[in-house]
Length: 357
Image (cartoon, rainbow, N blue to C red; front, side):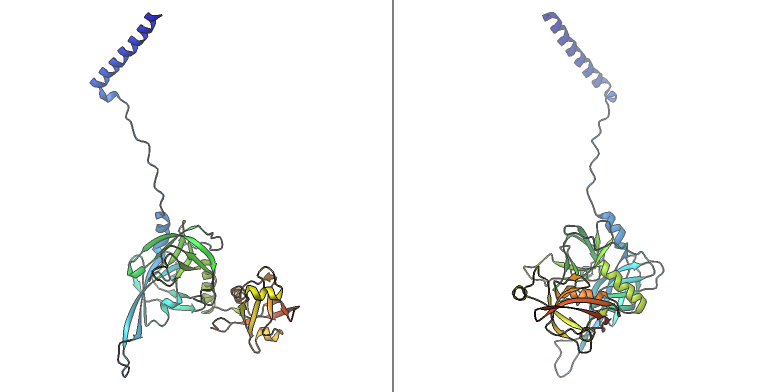
């Protein structure tokens, strides 16, 4: 038994020695050892490649009063501003913010390929802070339009624009909130909130998803101070679509109007009125001879629902009214002096600008 074990061990040693000599003399006989393929780093470069060619730079000039001029003689100076715009149609239509082009003496657009043009302002909508421009430069690279309805808090988004004149800049973040309102930035607020950096010059630029699809138009940041950062807002692309279609058809946006001024109720007021689940808003005013007045609504009425939808906020009521067409019937359930009532309001056409009414 011992001799068999010794023979086995001797055979192993001889085999290893022989293998060593072969490797020493003929190293080319060794198999080539290759490292495993590296896992590719995750990147949003494809999304940027898809969307960034459709993001243009906007340069505007305005005449502004020189605050340092003597009061006896008013002087003006030229103010140059940077902003962004997004090509949404190969025919040369671009979307930007209304505040970007408002009162501009000169507007110039520079495309991603370097071409420069002076666009025609097709129409504007101050109440959503949107403007539609058009350039005549032949077929252009339009951005693919996504949907903002399906956005979820936590979705990755990219902001592309022209901050501080730094062209084709991209920042990355997530959707922090949707349906954000009560900011008093525009009449119809339904913002996407994001922590993707939005700086001066990003206004009118693209907010895109991880597939490179447009989900919003960047419009504003919360007032900057030492304790505020990472709070930016974009107009949802679903809202942009409707505004653009209306401007293309009519040169302006036609909205329904009910001629009432709503206000939110406090929790104490709702409790005193016996209202549950934060339902109900107050009518601060009813426009004389407006649609609501003709239907019999009065100042001080409580609105509980519109077209079967429970009303929880002033913003919600304004959006429902604006989404109707002139002539549409809006069924309103309300409360007056503790008694419920139901009215049908024939929507009129919303005047061009009404502030919060």
